[in-house]
Image (cartoon, rainbow, N blue to C red; front, side):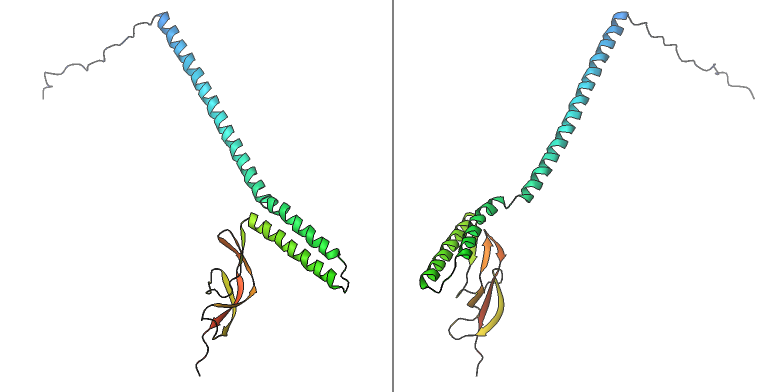
Length: 185
């Protein structure tokens, strides 16, 4: 067999030679590189400062939240101290068998209750005293039932212990006795 006639030696890649760059172009590129490196350094510095500031803000917020939890009742406590002082003063009064001393004791208790009610009002604490109201399991705790002809079924006949609410949240439900329909004879 004869080799094909059209065989040429393999083609060689053309030689590419870059033209030598002038010194001015090199200096210009070096200057641009230096500017870019400065911008990178400035951006990195700004980034690190922003990260540090965010960490400081996070730590401060954690400390503020911890302090808020720790001292949340400070205002309430400072107000309730006055009531405690009034009760302490009442306990030091010597009760003679005189009606005047007993009367003064009752007056002092009434004033102390008014002080306490003022503190409760200031902090959004309201009393739950549901006598005669329809039984509400979200605000009342039934401790027993009693058959009653005078009170409609499922209504509060008596309040054993009053309840309290903090704004719209029940702190303690009122303990109540609830009426039921009398047994049919």
